[in-house]
Amino acid sequence: MRVVPGLRRKVTFHRLNFMEENYEVRDMFDVVFFRNVLIYFDRESKTKVVERLMTHLAPDGCLFLGYAETTTTITDRLVSIGPNVYARVPERSGAEAMAV
Image (cartoon, rainbow, N blue to C red; front, side):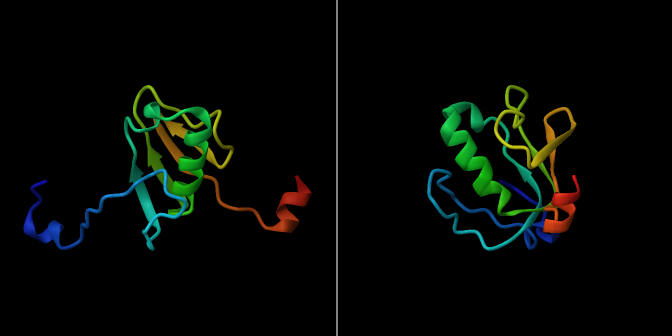
């Protein structure tokens, strides 16, 4: 990828095996672009991959998927906020969860 120098200093690229139990990523991200990847996994693998991604998606962070992909049947921890854009639902405290 070619990126202008000012932006290049703020961007890192890594290879990542989505099937590994733990991702070698220590950061939380506000935005994750994951377009046209889930279509290659079976349902069980999709669920595992999305749950692992969620551990690195900041509360209220956004996950962008491809047009043929959805998280609707995978997790209730993401809500659709636009075409192929899902926001992470912030974790509720124990008291908040019991009030529902």
